[in-house]
Length: 76
Image 1: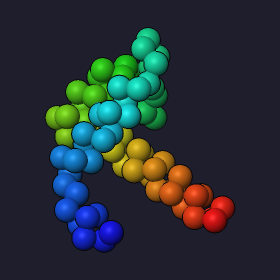
Image 2: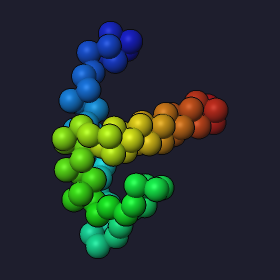
Image 3: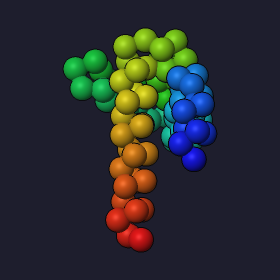
Image 4: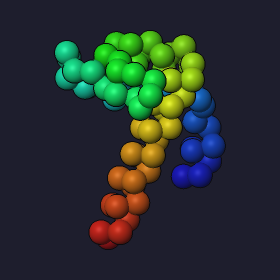
């Protein structure tokens, strides 16, 4: 399993985050603290460009997924 994880690239992670963002409801804006509000399309663009906001979104999504994983193991 760890060999598979070591083969995951930053691009793979960005693709996963973009896929998750695409599932967000249309017409909603997401607030990123002092950086302002963004539509899902704006966030997808930022993640694909890998700019500062995009990197922040990736970090948030990875933290969320990690917390889901840890919760699952706590329940076993």
